[in-house]
Structure formats: structure tokens, C-alpha cells
Amino acid sequence: MAFRQLIKRSYSSSSGLKKWVYNASGFNKLGLMHDDCLHEDDDVKEALRRLPEKLLHERNYRIIRAMQLGITHDILPKEQWTKFEEDIRYLKPFLDQVRQEKKEREEWEENH
Image (cartoon, rainbow, N blue to C red; front, side, top):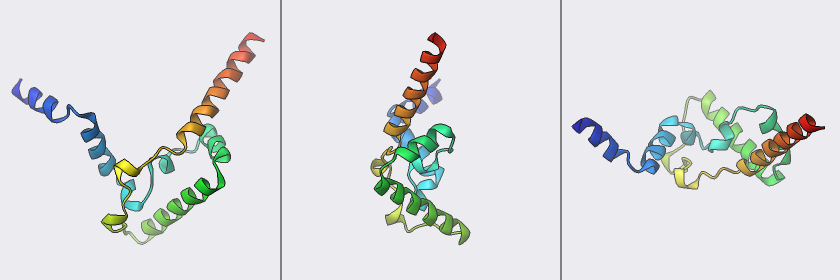
């Protein structure tokens, strides 16, 4: 019982646990952001197609740099790691829009 309370107290702030999981994942050590690591299904591919050119170039740069680091079995210096607070979900608005349109299309086809 005391162990449960200790665990509950230590993880009561979900941001602390989220930060720990984020750092444990390791993609930030390669300079990647969360959305850089999404599996590229049809929805993600369409969201990437809609992404502004500047954001797409930045994403491609991060992925190429991470691949080069993987080839050399290296990681970035700690000051260049992507920080939890700086990792924005740049693809999420586009992905949400694609999924909403897909849902609306399916609903329309069901009813007509």
C-alpha cells in the first residue's frame, strides 16, 4: 500500500512522466521531433503534402541528419538535443484536418 502511494505521488504530475518517456525514447538525441517519427500512412502522407514548404524542408533536414548520425553510430551534443518544451506538434493540425475530411467523406458516402 505504501509503495502504491509513493508511486502515485511521484507520478502525480503527468508532465514529469511525459518528460521522462520523451527523453527515454531517444529520438530527441538525434535532433528529431515527435512528428518526425510518425509512421507514414496515407493520412500522414497527405498531411505532409499540405505542410508549408519551409516546415517540410526543416523536417527533411532533421531526418537526414538523424540518418547520418545513425550511420556513424553517434548522437548530437546534449545542447543540440530537442528539448521536451521545444518539441511542437507541427504536423498535428494538418493531420487532424485530413482525418476530419476523411471522416466527413465516409459519412457523406454512407448517407448518399
